[in-house]
Length: 167
Image (tube, rainbow, N blue to C red; front, side, top):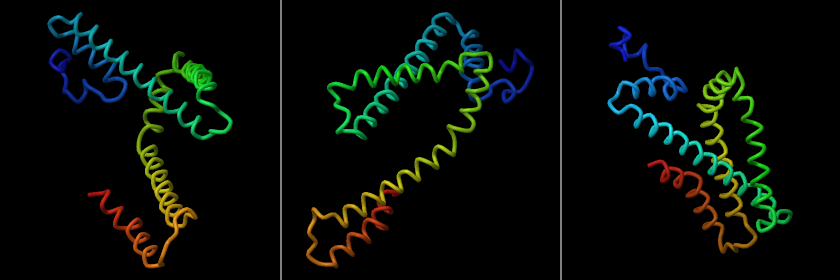
């Protein structure tokens, strides 16, 4: 592709949405048996999208059902909740199909799916970790014999366990 356009490779291939929908298709078009590879590529993209959608919907349904176990019975409400979430996700995806949809996708890709998302995930993990440690240490269900055991477990779960997880 760089040879055809008489330019450098860094000017031909870009990252992001351009890579999947401009660079790859033009590279596939130059290959022998390009029709077969193009069909295979777009079937792969379709299956990846469907798989991601199934996963996201199932995670959301499970989280909502787990958050409200007394109000929502999985036997009764799981299908309705799944259909409702699919409709909501469909309606949220409609603006991405308009003329400026590519700009919305690039905006979300650049700002919502990068370091901010990783930072939020790490902070959520820390809050959950602290909550579980404190609730385990001070739970009424567990009867501690001595304060020494509490102190040992608190030190282990606050510092040593964190070092064990990062090695």
